Length: 134
Image (cartoon, rainbow, N blue to C red):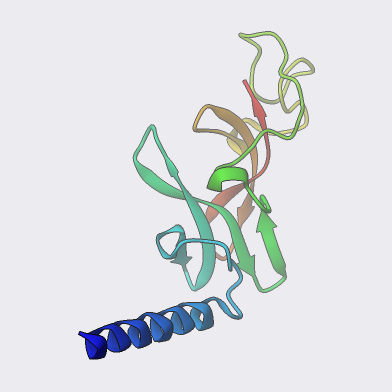
């Protein structure tokens, strides 16, 4: 029994060390393994979009640096503190919209939050850079 305890403890320690080493140098050290996806060779952190039950990128480590939302709370896009205009206002392109300077294709709704996005050419996907509650 004592031998089994020693082996189990050693295995747990080695597993923890291996897990810690896997995070060293990672562009997303706080992300769970299932949250990181390689898109056209670019590592991206993702969140689950509840409406579609698919993972979508929220931040990517491109050659020129990190693009997208940094440090999302609870692994989801968060509101930036902006207040939304009255309900029924368009999301983009008009003076009273959530993102008046954005083109309509730059805005997407992620888990109930309206988010302005940017295109990452290497991945051909859009990632949020700013989100507000609708």
